[in-house]
Length: 422
Image 1 (cartoon, rainbow, N blue to C red):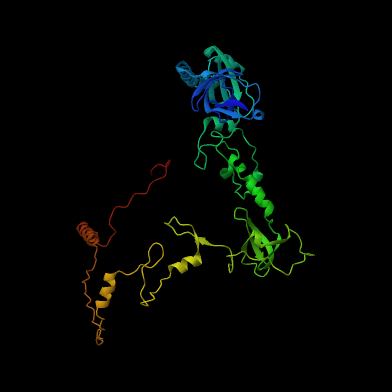
Image 2: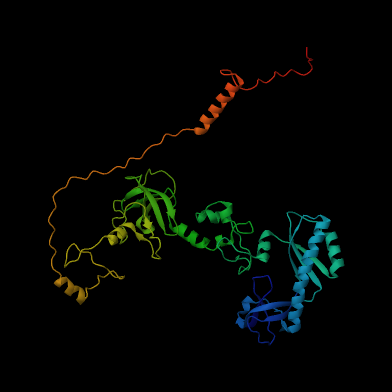
């Protein structure tokens, strides 16, 4: 067994082992360690502990010291220097006209090296850019081209599930993901639904792939010829999560039924002909508690309650009122547990002292009263404005002596241009 401490660098999610070199390091504190790139400032995620020798690559790098106040100030100064370098580098990229996107900047703990991370569609000639940056910062400049997955890991963010990105939280390395995994899990092949923030397939498709492959190996394939407790038929759908299959029976192909995997017997796997297949006389037995179920399962959840879904027949049975055994025809109130509440002594005494009701005598039929209808006076609607205008026109024509002739002047005929009057 080897005594080590686990260290995680800034912007990474992978733990590295280092030799404590006789120091007692607590989890959460910062240490200065020696790496192949020189001195680095990192955080301890797990203190002194023992691990098997097979998991350690000898020789281990030692821990130089636990970080002091000067080390914390140096780290803060480097963070400030990185922000300034980011803005200057973007200006230099625009001045040189390079097609590249700057993602992140990291400055070494000793301050003698600055690394610029960028993304680009192809190869970029950044030799002149390196010379300009070296003349500005007076340090060793290194430019690294990364992919879109590394960009999402450095920048972080939230996925479609609402949680932080897995690559920026706990993934040590990127796992290969293929479109076949989405098909196995019966997911939509819409790229917008199965792609992550980086634009590639989501890493979480790999998490449950082993469980889906195990279930798919035990479940029959689509269009398989199977024997069920209700007869033979073909499989029309497979539910890997519930381990159920949907079967179209030969006796009733219009109403498919669902069965558990243990309730069917596979006579032919996959597509093919039924010729030569011997159908056994004894049918598979139905599981306990599933007698009388027909058709696909249908569950309803009552809105507004946090209770699990119940089947529809049980809801209807539970909603029917029950009659009191002592007094038929009277509904009894039930408590939350479903048991009838016992009647109190006061209620029992009041019921005993209460006299019986005498039915009222029936009244003779009376003729229906005539409803009074109120008549409203209707006023004729006339347009007084039009009448006044017409009267004014007649008076004007009488004064001008043109009664019976059209009123108004006649517009003179316009002569065409270029023709003189004669």
